[in-house]
Amino acid sequence: MNRTQRSTLTVSTISSFITPFMISSVNVALPAIEAGFRGQGISAVLLSWVATAYLLAAGVSLVPMGRLADIVGRKRIMGFGLALSSLSSLACAVSPNIVFLLVFRTLQGLGGGMIFGTSMAILTSVFPPQQRGKVIGIAVTAVYIGLMSGPFLGGLLTDYLGWRSLFIAIFCMGAVPLFFLLFFLDGEWADAAGEGYDFVGLFLYIPSLIAIIYGISTLQQVSGLLLFAGGCCGLSAFVWWQGRVTDPLFQVDLFLKNRPFALSNVAALIHYSATFGLVFLFSFYLQYIKGMDAKTTGMILIAQPLVMALFSAWAGRLSDRVEPRIPASIGMGITILMLFFFSFLDGETPVFLIVTGLAVLGSGFALFSSPNMNAIMGSVEPRHLGIAAGSSGTMRVLGQVVSMGIATLFFSLHVGSHTITPDLYPLLQLSISRTFLLFSVLCIFGLFASLSRGEIHR
Image (spheres, rainbow, N blue to C red):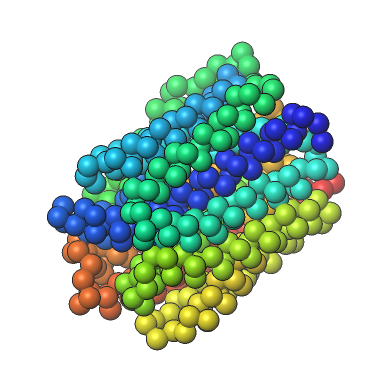
């Protein structure tokens, strides 16, 4: 491994750790944030937007930033993303009210989109195909270590120093990969330098995706249905335009003519749509229904990402030797079973059953994620790596937003805009159970996509 490869792996690994750490730690801190702004009458739905605002901004910016990085340089865009994300974290820490917090979380998400759209593309640019699964497995392991440590460390910081300390810690963390990127990483990797940028596609894509995502979380209202329908029409227009423009924002042909790429992305979208809301739901379940504090909640939630971290690198190496669809499909099957199990949780469920279920689910995550990412990045030409990274990142973040949207929808249907009080706990429990049940059904479709993707190693 040469100097550039070592530096690239370091930057990608640290960046891969920070974002999931931030997401999972903030989810655990949501009840504390609600308590800190209690005089402002924050409902469960509005509170969920502290998490969703970040994901929405990251989701809509991933593809545009991935394409821009291919043209002007992936290192440059990643540097801007790390700087914006870190500074926005500091601003979140000093937010005087929920409105400012949501604004800065949105800016933080924009920086996250720049990071997501470049990190994996840079990593796959500097390593040969025979090592790709291994290094992707290392990066994915860092993701799961971030998910693992986020609830625990986030719970400790929230209990002892307050929720604002989380964002200060994230600000400090962001400076580390930025330093390595600026002083140790050589190259820009602008494989599409000189090509044009599709601004028409940009203005079709972003509003359409925002309308779809916001519409999902408000489907119980007529305005939500109209937004969702309008967003789908706009996205259809975007796809039509991409097939006709000389330098498209997104290579539609990758989805239309590349079966492994298309179905691997669909499987990723469904998997994240059905699983990302888990930490959010368990944070509410353990702290409101089971009466635990943030620190204990974080310790319980460690079980899932701990197993994920232990097996992800191995699963990545396995996908270099066997077809990625095999371990990925097994992982999706395990996920289906565990999500169905979680739909039966109630206030009397023993903690050891919860921890066991989370650990088994973690093994399913590990078997799916690294092989599926290897399948996506290994199914395209080098000049499309930025688009592939942006696409896979978009599937991930869009799936995460859809997952939060589904959870928010059930909260809206059963809890409404009321502040969470003990008399509403039965309705909160009903919302959580029905969300898990729908998640398990979604994963069945993901299993079909995973099994049908075809071969990568030829």
